[in-house]
Image: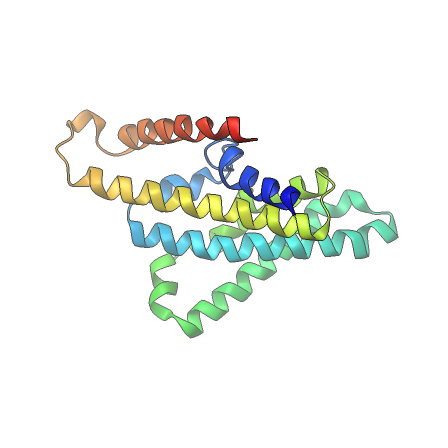
Length: 191
């Protein structure tokens, strides 16, 4: 049980996919202009990332390994991720049209989010069990959502402050992201 807690803590804070491994930077910089959009994207990505990592693990061990075609895993994982994103998109369109409209083009872009594919591949490379893959993907997704929400809240606050014109927009966002990355590196002593 303590091993699962270490896997969760490691994926959530120590090896955060956005701030430590620099995966998923496109939604991190593009969607975090508001807290609400960042939270919605984080939650949608959490669902897709966790479900796709577990599904990819199952397909890998049930289909690819018995057939001896492990080299096809990236192609299979991309198809699995795209299918899960489509299911989420259909569900959101029916259940919450406002959230679906809020996410807009960013929902289909979860398919190309390198963090989603990266988690599935890293779980296999670390030879995690199914339970460890689930906990790892859940921790990575929670870390992604945490960073998205924090950065969205910071950017909303910064937008209401007096900032020199030269720093408005991308320059200040990049400096802020760098400072957040340094702060998350402080968690490195936990593992």
